[in-house]
Amino acid sequence: MEVEPLAGRRHVAVTERRTRQDWAKQIKQILDERYPAAIKFGW
Image (tube, rainbow, N blue to C red; front, side):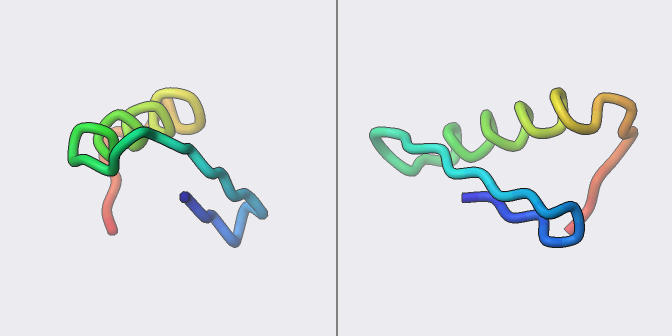
């Protein structure tokens, strides 16, 4: 589940397992689709 309160967004992705690879794929998808011009991101 991803939440971006300031933008009013939330998204739920259901996978068979919760692995590091699943998390990494989800983060990559978010960055590629929503923030393609981003050079870096941080927590």
